[in-house]
Length: 179
Length: 182
Image (cartoon, rainbow over all chains, first blue to last red; front, top):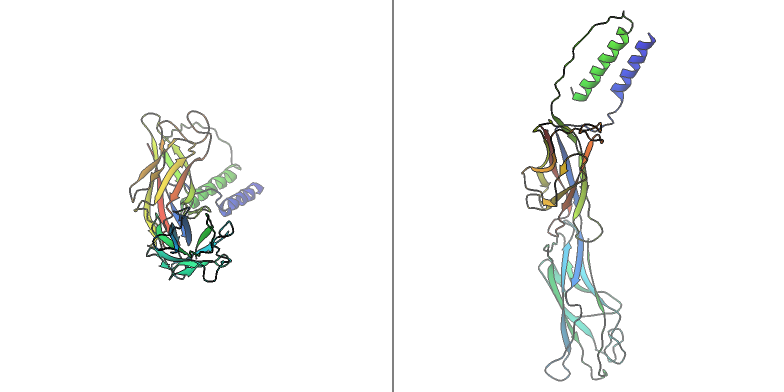
């Protein structure tokens, strides 16, 4: 009788124990899932932009910085933007300055272009060393090409006679974001 | 009734028979047993796998899929295959597309048989072979052509484009693996 009861116990345990082993069959199906999220990246294609003047004396210095960006914003309520910030300012001292211009009205300003995935800034805008300034904005469901879309910033630097002759350089940082 | 429940009921019957029969008188007899061992293959894959992109922006989504299998092939002129086939493309629309060539695969770490080589694009709906099993092998036991591992395993490395053109959202597709043995 004990043996019968033991056997019934074993059988009960076998029947009730969850299957600890994977199910083996001649076929098996896997659901592959992926969550595609908002992303953005930017590459500056003109690492060094030389501003130059031409034509009439004391014409402004001009030059163009090109960039390529990839962006994907949220389908329903996403946004994105590209901004620029000057810093460090022009150096050495004695020449142009974005943060502390030697004469009132001296500026580093710019106009923008971007591909149809975004909306370019309405320039000219004045660059700053303290506040990021707009280059482009993106609405919901904005998507660039796989290789990236193109854009540019055309610079205009005041040619003030007060600047000492010399070569001056500043750094501009471009930032892209997407939600 | 599922196969698992049937198996458990057979065990139930066998144990009950043993329990009651052990109280009966003992008899001796001779019985000739014969069995036909047929080639066979079975596999198991996880029901879901999530592809994840590492930190860098727009880097591909990747994932590793473990296929477990048991196989026995005929010693002469036998063999086996594990194939992979897309049974439904990513949905909803607006995201990645297997038929558009967005998904690639590679094979690695087969404990029995020869895995596919290199990285290849998953075709739309065509079957592709991810593992080839030679003749005269089997899973488990570690002797006589049988592998020490039981079950055997194979890693499928999946790599999905991260195209900015994909709309944000959650997408899923189904891939079916099939094993055959002769």
